[in-house]
Length: 99
Image (cartoon, rainbow, N blue to C red; front, top):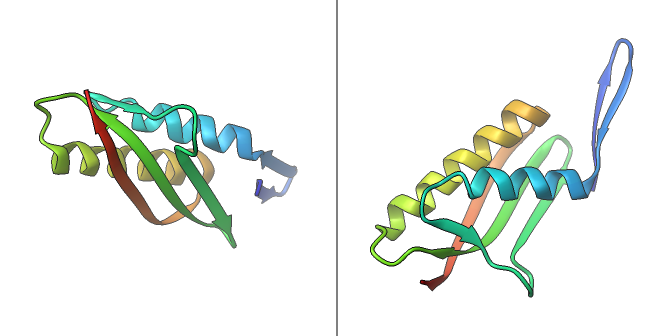
């Protein structure tokens, strides 16, 4: 679902592909993280200016997994709230693989 921001000079639309790109870039800013490719690797649900994100990621061997996951949650929440004005209800992180 697109995010539509209403303003006094018109509307701004952020389509799903842009939201997906934003979430991917935010998550991969965390050192030692990359998102899984191929099958479903992340989902962004938006409704009434609220977002919920599910991510499947690959972590580098030796990384402290809870710290990596929290870092991804913080980066994604900050990106969506700052860049799109969304209230982020949750970022669910699944560490699918260690490499």
